[in-house]
Amino acid sequence: MWLRQCISALQAARYGVDCEIVVVDNGSDDKSVEMLTEQFADIKIIANDSNIGIAKAYNQAIELTSGEYVFLVSPDTIVTKDTLTKAIDFMDTHTEAAGSSIRMVTPQGHFIRSSKYGLTKKWNLLIKWTGLSKYFAKSRITSHIKARPDEFETAEIDVLNRSAMILRRHALKEVGMFDERFTMFGYDVDLSFRLKIEGFRNFYFHKTYVINFNIKPVPKYTFSYLKYYYGAMLAFVTKYLLEAPKLSLDTTRKVVFTPQYEVKQ
Image 1 (tube, rainbow, N blue to C red):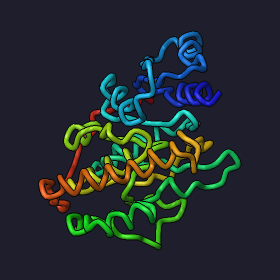
Image 2 (cartoon, rainbow, N blue to C red):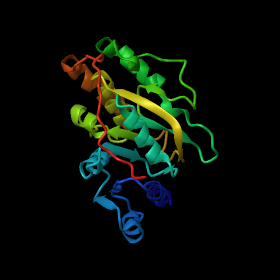
Image 3 (cartoon, rainbow, N blue to C red):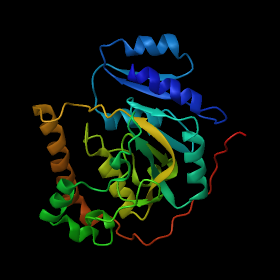
Image 4 (cartoon, rainbow, N blue to C red):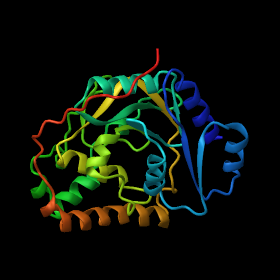
């Protein structure tokens, strides 16, 4: 049900936009592939034999596309008719942006704060306790910011939201795509981190919205949740304790892109 609604909404939102829709099925057993084949003949489908993880699935989809922008959305999310056009226009006019999160609301219309979250308290504490913050002294990502922009204020953020984000392909080519070691959690934190420390800017965009049903990839407080969530944190720390000294920390460089994408009027 979630996937059908998600695709239907995307098809309505793509009117006037030259784009392609790619769905990656991670070895589901609910006949999702059959449903997609029968009801959505104009989309591309990648059917994996098993659950290869969200990061790798996203990479598969990105590699199959060629547009200037990549819009990633989880299947429990419904876009509005103007989501794509407004998000693209924002990226076109904010050429310093490598990516942007989209304002999310619940089905009841309540604002979802994770639309614009930075690192959670657990991630912040982890980075500080391990001493990684000294490598990223120029980045706000290691600071716990209490005063955050409100729902209706577009602002620079640290971590792009995994449920609905638009990315500039050129930026992905420079920093690399999602790290496939982060299967269920942390892949958004890792990519956002790399974008920030290489001088790119991430934003929260409020002038459109998506509806998110917040269906967890694995139930919270289960063994699988603990394994993937804390495993992602361990992988993140291990990666940057070993690689941080090699990373460029010139976060002052000015990054400007020339849009090549056109929205048909």
